[in-house]
Length: 278
Length: 315
Image 1 (spheres, rainbow over the protein chains, first blue to last red):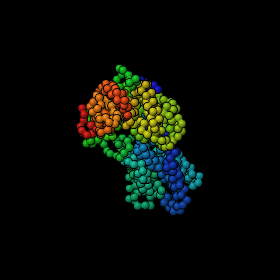
Image 2 (image 1 turned 180 degrees about the vertical axis):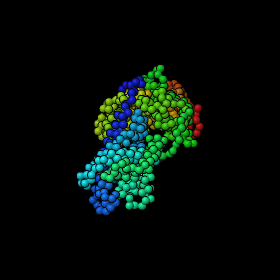
Image 3 (image 1 turned 120 degrees about the horizontal axis):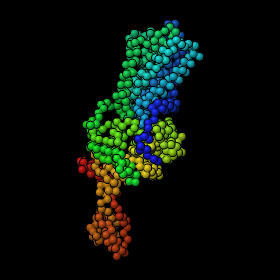
Image 4 (image 1 turned 135 degrees about the vertical axis):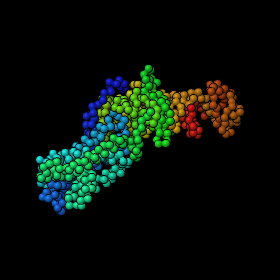
């Protein structure tokens, strides 16, 4: 074994390859995790089928003139994003940190941000696959029509959502100290928001204050924009400016927490101002 | 010190290192150097500050004060270029349970521009037969071997080994020692922490002992705590019908009448000659005769005991 002491011999690995390697690693882990499979594919599919088939009154909550499946398909797609980018990120980051995986990675030349970029890419890929399956099933079995002239809005709103949900999830993971509390925290924060944010039923017949409250959080603007993109009447960018501001604010807040406080070491969260040695 | 490189700058330089956790000072003014190619053993009881010190050198923690250079880098700000040249074996954990040994080593190899062959590293740590096994199925000793493989795969110039053989059976420990000795021969610098004093004695060129956040002793394993100059202890069971007063070259210590006698001496050859001549003259055997120098463990425990009882730093 020959030690490499010359600086030139230590040329760094190209960053895009590191990001792709991390994404592949995260996807490999996801394929071996029953929970990941359940969250990103089985649960959304179950929701799509059960709400369409079992809930006879569902149609009454859909926007006027729109079949319930036409509303539910993009809504469940938003649910896919929440599972892939929010729930999976919180549970897997906390698990990796508390098991010492992050601490070990931090001791390697892997730049910190490429780990998160790899996770994000994996979330993007799993979201895309699960949404493609959901939409495919909806088109084949529930006669859902793709609104091609608004499909770009669907993709754009989805991308905005996945970035926002991912960064907020990575920020939330900082505050969660135990692996066993990660899933309750993730579902405990996501499900109530999903219920009031038009992910399962449209809130247009609900109280106004609930509709307005949901708009403060990033889920409702994203879900409503994705749903509007499946409405043939939509001809312009369907997210109101206030909704966009809300999503961007949450995204920026998540990014700020990550920059200031993301943790690589296991253990409880303690805020320590960074100090530099003299 | 066969791997040490004369004329090369030290691999590790620590000067006046301090680390505070709130009002508690975990490391207080620690200074030492590790030469390039040297194996330096850091000893100390739990809470002595050695893990904190090592984690600062690894770049895992930001120090409160003091100067630290590792391979010429400040570990806090060394970034990728620093991390590409060090390998770290953490005290515990850090494996993805659902990945196989080969997948783990391949993943870590992918972080480096010029890694070692994955197959070679797995073979070197003795996991060739387990390379397709998921890490959750490995024993404690096998996991430590995997830890070592992950630290080695980037061809580091400096390796931090934190309790590298904990959980190993005696054979596996000997194999690991062999591997570490080979690293030494290749010129790799190693900072080793261990609870096994025989391991440190076997492997380390120099040893530092930490207690209460201070570096209280630093020497070669042979000379630690004045071990090389300390007297030899001669012990044997006193034959019946004799007393300690009958023995030559005294005085001999006797814990109880008719029991074992012993003597600390700086002239063991002369004392042994007188004793064996005396025994031969009386046609006696000397049952239980032993001639020993203080072990590293005895010296270490004495140093730690002195620090604990005294509660103050020894200069």
